[in-house]
Length: 201
Image (cartoon, rainbow, N blue to C red; front, side, top):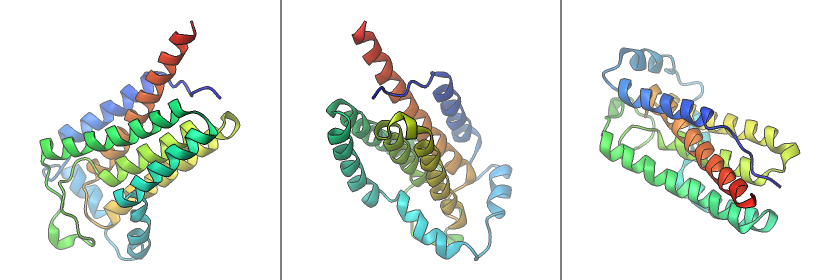
């Protein structure tokens, strides 16, 4: 089962979007504040409290281990290692970004769940995108891969939106998290596919 071979163009576009969100979003951006106000309301809060857990690291870490095991037995040890590398290195890079950028979250008075870390990028958006997307790309067989990728993106999108509904992130944090998670995943998958192709020749 060959690795998917996305071009470098899509990762470049996604990582450019991530950079734009990092440079131009945040508490001093009028656009961020205006979009954030669109998510005010109580209707979706109970569902958001539940769905946001699909981006929690205590859930995604064992999922990463289970996903790596599934890929190991169903596909190959090399691909299982790639999956673990994508998720774990991506998590490390997200934490570095948070510390280095030190962006403040929205006002604590409006938050609907407890958070203690810094704001950019949204770790829930990034972690869920990396984990679910990488699992779809590396585990699903080619006939089912497109559907699996679509489901992974929809799930990660829903998790990211919960962070806006719960008022713990700026929209640019969430968009940046999605873009970084998808861009990092596709970049490493593309590099791995290219390396394997060169070895065959």
